[in-house]
Image 1 (tube, one colour):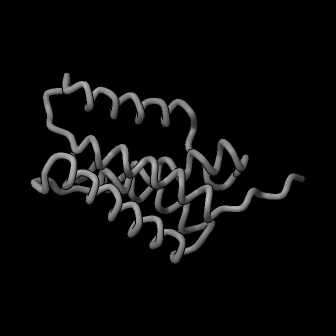
Image 2: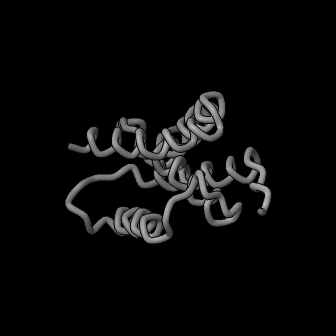
Image 3: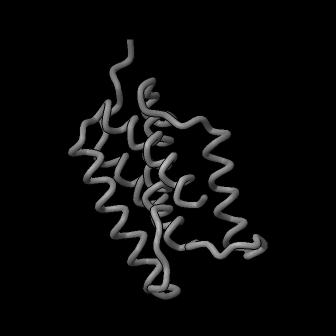
Length: 127
């Protein structure tokens, strides 16, 4: 179920980025966020994990930033979904959920996605 959930987020968020900014941009975001999130999780906890969650948090941060700060009509994530994802990450850090989560991968993925959006995306012209 976890893999299916992650693949749905990957398809939804990654698809928006790919359609508007191209495959190259999506590939850069995926590779850099995968590296930062997985290295952080391995260094801060251990290397005994696998998943796409850190990349998905990067894609969420990237799309949220584009919609919120660049006022993009093409790449965006509604605030309520973004708040839910951040809340879920906080619950993971509090360790009150019945599942183990790669919390540091989530956090570093989110940070890297927002940072990459700041660097790679220019605001859309206002009409």
